[in-house]
Image (tube, rainbow, N blue to C red; front, side, top):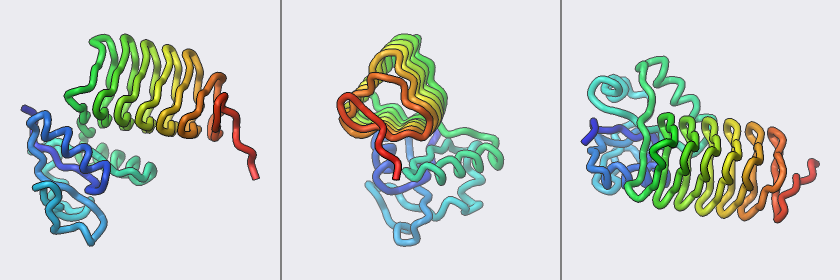
Length: 213
């Protein structure tokens, strides 16, 4: 059993992370959330203690408990991760569902959410602060950089590479060896057969870039 955890973010993603920690028999000390309407509430038996800037709770992190950032808004999530690193000299722990299958040769960073039925193949590399939703498959030797979000049921082919802050919609397929550039977006159900440039949105089967207005 690991140290108790404070979760930043009490909405959908936070609830997913709470369930994962509970299934792993890890105590969740409480949530911190900047929505005043949530503060003081009890969510699945766990209190929303206050906001993400409250010193009395921040002081516990790294000393008496671990932390996970479950904020869906990407820019805010990055700000909170940076704050924790600078202020507390700490990084978020991984939240890994017990049903996930992770090859012994796969490499993991920290602060990742790995949900129900996810599979990480041999030699796959998952950097930090990524979200892999239900039944994502990452084949062998694929490389996933920081702050990547991959929707439920998606498949990342062998040797494919997803750069920082890539978004992959639910049910998408990125075939073996494809490189997806930084902050690109892959539409739900898309089948990506060729490399995707940074900042580009692609849709369809086969996936093609959307027209810029």
